Image (tube, rainbow over the protein chains, first blue to last red):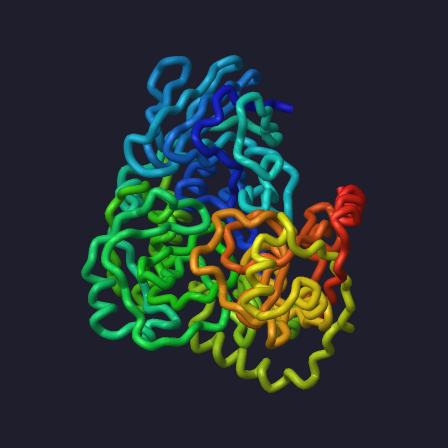
Length: 313
Length: 197
């Protein structure tokens, strides 16, 4: 079986696919790629099924050697990749010859870059998914972030791979956003008009202690109206919860499945991938849209991801 | 409702998150409209009487109270105006019901805590609560399956693994189970911990 040698793991690199949906009753959140759009495109570039597992790098990439060679693609943010010293392009598949190494550095754009390899990364599935859930140490490669010296298995492939490239139009439409579109949350009415105005009119900064569980924001406090505590209830990906103190937290892919803080809004599905590209100190704003708009934006995104014109050869 | 939706899964429904008195139903917004989901759920609501629930098990969880395992134990006993012995006896005196699992894999929300032990959460949550920690918050109690941040007051720790990926029943507890805590010594904790690993 072909392998990838981890020469340098980078800051925080994990094996991720599209996650395990459906285990909420056990308290298991889906996890999965922080920017699923990039992972799906990366997989298509190398001829994989879009749900194949790849490597998710965060802020600082690693160095990976391919002793047996591989067809690979990088998707997401620009981490200044080089293949044996020569610049390696994003959003296109290319061949790493036996013995070559792909080196990535600090990000020059957003928070995450995905390394997809033809055949996918092979790990023992947990609840049907290869995704790493860091907090519980489940799934992925030994339930943890990669370390120097790890050896990853590449899945079997058949046939030859043609070089593919993402179209400029698709790339433009997939650009991560800093203005996050939201629908009203289930406790929207716990917040008086003045607080909602603060929430929708202020710029928030992404806090340093942001991770795959939640994106913490700094800025103007959002004060809820009445006294009273929420009884713990199910919470959704993208929920914007407001704890005591009023600084919003956006629940992210490795979210808790239930929570007791009121939720003022929920980021729409079509903007989830943008959350995965937010870096500490980035500035974000919220824009309110209705459910129909949210649905049509998701439909548009899915149509783009399924379209034939997405990639060309 | 959760049981019914698990037994008769609806195409397009992707996940279910139970709470104390609610159920979050996640669905594929491109396959279903909110109104359709609501109509379907209303039909299910009419049928709740016919749902057969699995037999509740009684699960005993050994706990070593106080000391380094229960950093808030002394304070809780003091706040509640009782001796250490009384606090242990009280916490271990009742059968708790598993209301639901949530937060992290295998975390069971247990209730209700005897009135005399009811204490608010810590004002500042801990950044890291060790796995196996037994805590209380309001009228709830529970065991942290993994090392996570947490704001519950910690009374003790269990050597039992609450969630294990390589076990048939991943989660030790299921909704509807009954739980009783059994006080153990530090020596017994060490012995049981070895047996579990």
